[in-house]
Length: 118
Length: 117
Image 1 (cartoon, chains in turn brown, orange):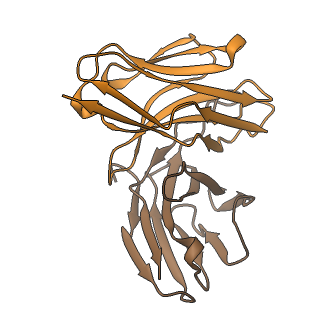
Image 2 (cartoon, one colour):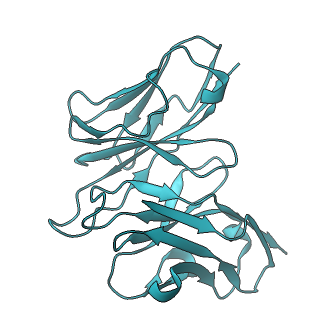
């Protein structure tokens, strides 16, 4: 596609429900990132994939958060037993790798999924 | 570790006057620096990026930023504001070689730019 797409755009969940958020990166982009943006804050890093390998998950706030990218393309962020503090916009970004030994590629962001936990 | 501080949470200007959004960074390595803009209900859009080439970086829509290593600053400027510039702006740092080279981004808290007619 022309850009990064995410679905659903809006999700309302009752506390305790599980949710799954989908990201379709730009075709051919090796790197995929998830960020969480709380209201009034800047986005914060959650996790990073290179192809299907999850190389960094240091930003995931708890073991209720799980991300996968099984075929190195589409990624899913799953949140189990949602809590009110999980309410945020979840952003996905993809990039192609930078030149070897030099700078990383530009990250292109999707529109985000706004999750509201009641 | 790396971090970004945006010195103003809100900036208000009149249409046609200059824009200055201030950003200071901290990084243990030679950083890559970015400015992203976020319009309401839209995704983040890259305005410009610095990656150790020219210190004065020109971006889209007439914006530019100057990397000043001695001041650890990367302020965003535009000579003349337009109503369509009203949005939230994020200064962003990414680790370079020797750091987190894959491109993990660290965002500032954001500056909301208001443009008055």
